[in-house]
Length: 283
Image (cartoon, rainbow, N blue to C red; front, side, top):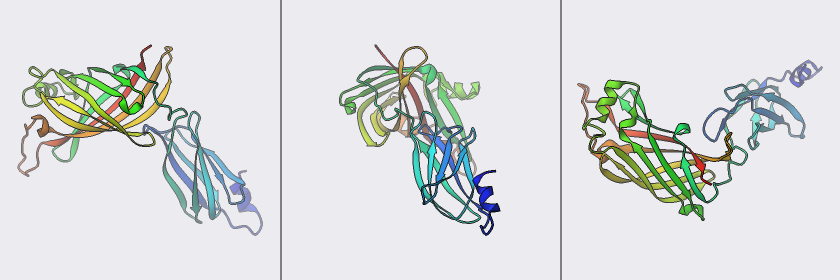
């Protein structure tokens, strides 16, 4: 019998019917499975302690109306506490709660870090017919990150094989490799070279650089999120980061399109780029 049941059955005490809910995510946006939600009342008494599911959802039910402190914990992550107000018959939601990985605030040590393409990805999304999206990825790329001291002096150099575009459709991929789009025969390589790194607060950074695509070089800014540093199973040390940006195709001489009778372009003019990188420390 849990605390909520005991409260409901006690003489003269109204049944507790409120709840606190949360969805727990890591800094990378993935669910944190089996996170624990502990609820403390105004007297400092623990009134609930429940474990979430594999999708990061956690619910502490059977709470009486009142103010509470909710503490979310998970193995390998830093705890997070929030205050919330519960009303009878309703659930007080904490929304998406983001837990930072233990050690996630530690920046990579100065030196050379090489991108591991096997455990990294570069994905591109474009709108199709104005109602859905086409997703693709580049399968061949490499590069290096030189962490400076101070870290703002760090540099990033990435090289991507344009012919490695993969949207899971051979006919479409051949068209993307043609002169209508990537023109891989004339411009076989896509490059990014950083020009500046600035902190935005917490684990967020602005990474500025020059992107060369289809022979055109333009400045771009990557909204970058540093995920942390840790050991790998092979005796090395890895650092991880994610980054996003949006590009206009016409800025890189990719103007091919087909207009529908409704006036909507078959392929969107904006590309969303999502990057997930692991880099290994060079001894």
